[in-house]
Length: 61
Image 1: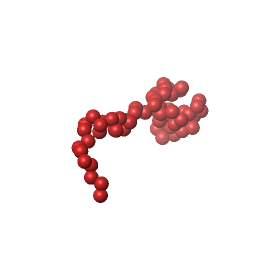
Image 2 (image 1 turned 120 degrees about the vertical axis):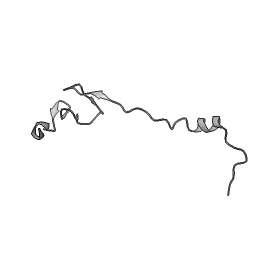
Image 3 (image 1 turned 60 degrees about the vertical axis):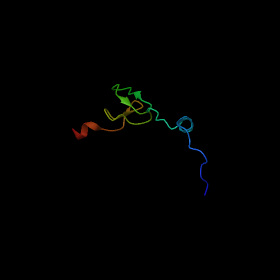
Image 4 (image 1 turned 180 degrees about the horizontal axis):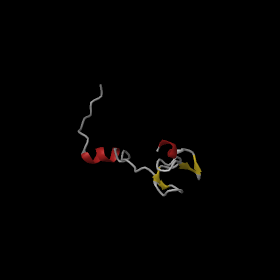
C-alpha cells in the first residue's frame, strides 16, 4: 500500500481544496410579488411562474 513520504502541509492541502467552497444559490425577484425565488421555479409566495398563476394558493386559505 502506498504511504506518503512526507506530511502534506496546510498550504498544499488548502490549495488542493480551493474549489470545494460553497457558492450561494442564485436568486431572482418574482415578477408578480417581488419575493425572492430560485430561477425556473414557481414562486412559493404567490404561486406564479412566468406571469401565469400555476398554483392556486387561495383554495387552501
